[in-house]
Length: 347
Image (cartoon, rainbow, N blue to C red):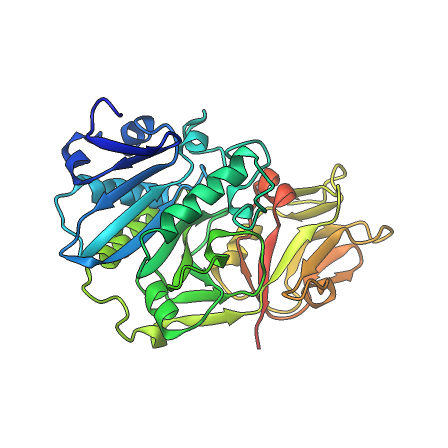
């Protein structure tokens, strides 16, 4: 790509481009991805050069909606309302075959768990996280959006540590739903850039609707003169999520019947629970109740609240109360190495 586009290299591991690149980017998202070799930063000059908005995408290589939206914008002739910095964070993972199916820069090392890594951690993934952090901070952003896809089929929603009006205004450009979380997992959105910041989960990675959410929201984010425009009241806030995880080396499967090869079997259509409230008593799956339940539901204080989420009856798992489930996935790798889902208790 460096032979095609005018660029400046300030760090041998980071490639920077300016407005001169637009006409030379490949016309397809796949072609564009193949032009990228590492952390890549695009700086666009806006009508108001005194302010900068930042967007990050492809922190996970299997979450393409934000990348597709950025590609469409970068190929367009539109001029943003303010300066814009676009960070393509992890194209190496996305390029690894099968394309757009690999989540990690390195095996089982989730980039979005390393933004709080200590300086003593000199691993490749920790260094990449520090480079991204520095690239965001150095432009003193007016706002920061981190675009993702959910692990399973799902509507779009935002995730943030704050429900300030500015954060809610930011989320409203993409979705009318926010998870307000106090859980800390080392994600980019947990950093303090002295600016509103939110993660946008655009929906499932393979859904056209998700790509449209990212594209429409990014257009609003880039073109509006003012994004803090009192739309906070439109956003429905879900507070205090619990992170439901497998315990130690427990295994999970997904089926219409109980599997003898896993510790827990969740129902095959469990991803549909992302779409609506889950009432108390809703059937979730199966479990051998002669063994300790190998699940935990971690709250914002680090305590296990699994008894609030799951009720066991006759070897079956049921919702312990009315819940809103988020990020439910039937991808075994993610369910095993990250979490099964998030849940908020609903009155």
